[in-house]
Amino acid sequence: MLLGTYTPKLDEKGRIILPAKFRDEFEGGVVMTRGQERCVYVFSETEFETFADGIRRVPVGSKQGRDFLRLLLSGAQSEQPDRQNRMTIPQSLRSYAGLDRDLVVIGAGNRAEIWDAQAWDAYVTANEEDFSNTAEEVIPGLF
Image (tube, rainbow, N blue to C red; front, side, top):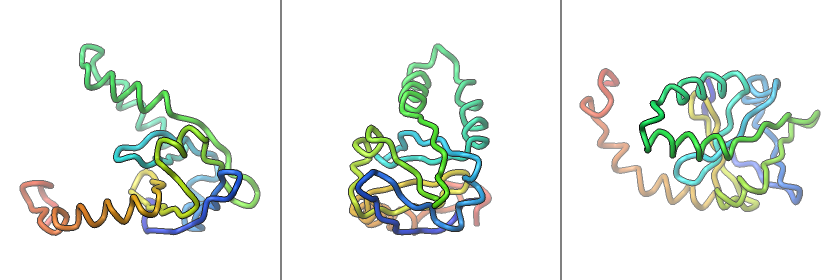
């Protein structure tokens, strides 16, 4: 399970160094794609296959499902971390997420998410109150 918050820098070639705690999970390669809220989702190859299998079950008659599938899969790209544990974020995904030099990488269970540092700070600030107010009726069985 991917957990935690890390603050790597994006180098001039569009690469980041993977957080040490994520390296075992991603050593076989990653799939990066558009994430919701303008971040980049990073899955292990295996986890992405599982995730994509679930999405492919959405009925073709569902416009919302088709739209989600198209945007998610059309933005997906495979990447293999190099020997220094660096991973290149494709330019299209850097543009989509507004990534600049300062990044935040979070563990989100089955995936990592890469955020522009300012966008992450704004997201946390905007959602802290809702997080504090999340109750049993929102996520049954949580508390």
